[in-house]
Length: 315
Image (cartoon, rainbow, N blue to C red; front, top):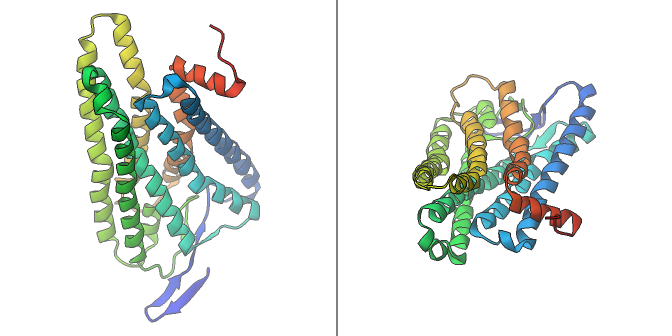
């Protein structure tokens, strides 16, 4: 452990990330699995982005937000997995204090933008289904850009606040993180100083970053469900629900794992469950999103086929 001495005692200058498994013989297996997962996730999300860009049918607000969501998913997994793969290759478990905080900042920045993009997508579905006559004017290009820009600004403020707050903590001895990336709960556990203010800050900002968007999403879909049930034709109801089911699936997975990770800071010690939730947050969610959004969407499937083969699918 590298450390430096200050007037207040010893200060940790690097952390040890134990990773997913502590047995070196299993590291090659972990490396191959996560390299494949990273390639599939990046390839899948960039394919969705390319499909949204090249297919005229997908030049709508919903797919504009989906394209941005795909970029965020590539960013989220790129913040955590490549550095883990490098450490596995180098057989090196240490990460400098500054690099740990940098990873923390960008992870919360990109995940925060995800929160607001999912909310914008729910608002888009609300306008499209509940207020179709004013949809084109209330969700024009300017509104779309404002929603995305606002997502970045709010998320930047959240990530910067947490990162600055972490720098006020004193790390004087323990520096082993039983996970594969740096995040708030693990750093709180290692701090030699009180984390009460940091935990209160996390709870308050989690309400703003997750609680408020969840309430807006829930409210939007109550109105959407009521509007869909008023549609007389079964085919019309099926089409309306199909455009929302993919988004609701992603919302459930994203917020479910996020709440489990950040809303139980009173637990005494981190466990293997935290690693599993970390894998969901950083790998599984971004990897599943392209599959979820294309599985029941013929327009996305046709666009992906065009991107991958250069021609439209046979009718």
